Length: 239
Image (cartoon, rainbow, N blue to C red; front, side, top):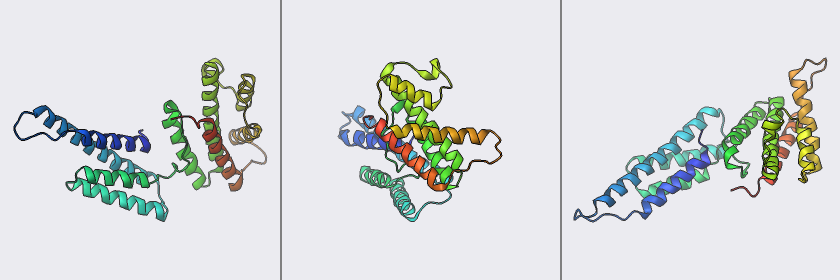
């Protein structure tokens, strides 16, 4: 699944490409430029269509959107309608501006993520947000744990060149944090505390217990915010 951010990037690229194409003269000498212009326009139309498909998918996957998001979505839809009615590069720029103002649910954390993991991690963040919204708190914390594990594996690989997913499959978050410490990577001490909570939820969720563990909304929200903050710090230099 292509991320919304990537779709925006493609639209910007299509606009820049079309804007740089020299308009051919009428004397028939610059046929290749005419073809280049037609190709650039087709690419622009495809990029706008990708934006339209992306917001349609967002609508399907979200039962309730807040008023601000609905207003941004209405503005974006209006700009797309204008472009499809015969718009030019200027209306395409209107689409891009409206698309940048619209923030899809689950994307408001504004984190720079590693390119190779971006799609997977964005999907997990979105699913984690959906679970929290529907009060599936254990599922939210388990997904937060997956995000934290994914991030720490990437940090360890970048530091050592060793992929623990291959050399030590199934390694726990606690042991992963220990390996990071041994390799000279210093993490906030609270990461270990967070890992303990996540492991507790995982164990309690898959094994029968006399008194089942149920994290509270506040506890779950704090876990999500902490996880997002940790990702932001770990990947602050990612492009």
